[in-house]
Amino acid sequence: MDSRAASVAMAGAIALFATVTAPDIRPFGAVRVAPESMAYFPGNNIGQPVPPAEGQAQLARNVPAQGQAHELRQLHFPLPTSDGAALYLPAAPDDAALWVNGMVGGDAVPATYFGPGFGPHRMALDISASRLSFEDNRVDILSAQGWNTGRKPVIYAIPARTGPAFAAMMTQVETRLWQGAVAFGAVGLLLSLVGLLLLRSRALYAGGALFSLALLDQALGVLPSGLRLALAVAGVGVLLWRAGWQHRALGGPLIAATVAVVAGAALLAGWGGSLGVLWGSNVALWPLAGLALPLLAVGEGRLEWADFIAARAKIREQAVVIAQQADALQETIRAAAIGEERQRFVRDMHDGVGGHLLSLLMRVRADDADRDEVAHELESGLTDLRLMADSLDHVGHDLDEALAAFHRRAGQQLASAGLGFDWSKPQDLSGFEMDARAVLSLYRIIQEALSNCIRHARATRFGVGFELVDGALAVTIEDDGVGFAAGAVEEGRGLGNIRKRVEKLGGSVVFGAGVEGKGCRILVRVPGSGR
Image (cartoon, rainbow, N blue to C red):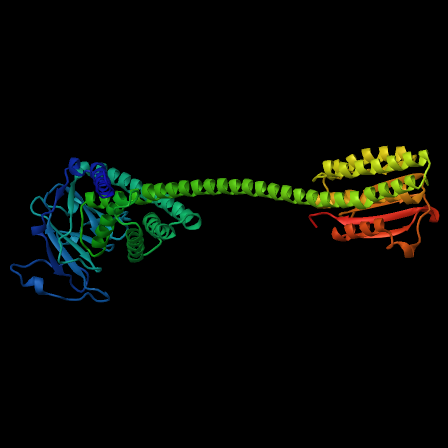
């Protein structure tokens, strides 16, 4: 079934439900006043009915009532039964006054009309038994608000024997209509406001809010009937404009509500209607506010939630991709750092270890070195070579891992050289962020200082300490050797390499004397990669 047929079918179902549930006044013996027996007359200037005359001359009289802003009109008809106890008018002016046989006939009991909220009040006009005769009874209903003389109103005469039951039934009708207007109007208004704030189809929910407000005010009675009609017409108009009558969720209820609003406008214009019409024009409004708008909001809410879940899943996928790309980038940086260090390693082998071995070979050929000295120099060069190779195997993102590798290798080298080793690292540095290139550079800085100590310092102890100061890593390197003069700091190749590496890391380095002016102390401070 396509959307058009579904909308028509739903509208038909709503009409059928309204018809089946409509109150039936036939069991109460109600007799409808024949429209052809009714006639309109202008009332006299003292607000009393004018006795009808033969012919049509009396119908032409038009005497305004004194003190009235409107013409006082008189509706005249014969009572269809002598057993009448009450007259029921589904739609009548508020100020209707009942006269029976030229005398005040009874009490007018108005009750708020819960139709689309746009028509007059209904009236239950109780007739006093003392006013009735055994023959024909003449009834006149006067109103300063005026009757629509182009139409004959719907009027029912209720027999005395069923009058109390009829009154009880009408009370139930009023209660049900009031409850329906409050319940469905409040639900529609609430979900329309939620849709306005949270969902996409804001124009639809704006129309739903206007319509639901008009429905809710049928029970509250705060707004004038004309304004209530305007709200309902505006709401239905917006819904038709934005959704159309073929909309899957709104089509059928929207058709029914449109017909009900048109009926309400006709009632406001003074066109009377039966109790079934009034009931149906109420019930036809309920599905749009209490069923269609909630279904629309729930459906759109589910779509919004599905979009949210899909967006969150996409964000997670993108986060995984970004993390993978970041890991790949870090690996690329690490590989580039290792490649650069390999080139440095080759240069160091050529300039450092190679040069050292070449110098030793020349001394051996010149018979300028004894056996023990040659063994010591070879062992020193071999240890230096192992330390440089070891730096390439253990460098990475984890600073603690790289320093642990250096600690093991440097300890062996210093023990072989007969030097004591002081290692101070009280804090866990795994949380200190340094990229692969920075970790490798720091490794080489400490290694350079160690090589210089073994070769030139003539020290007995070598120490390295670490601590975190204001988010930066502070490294203290010292020995108890011969030290160096401050003016000669830049002359040595080893110290120059240290300075260049530190500056490349964006840090600072200070060379100076050790404790009590003895030995050498190097203070290095480097920032993390996140700073």
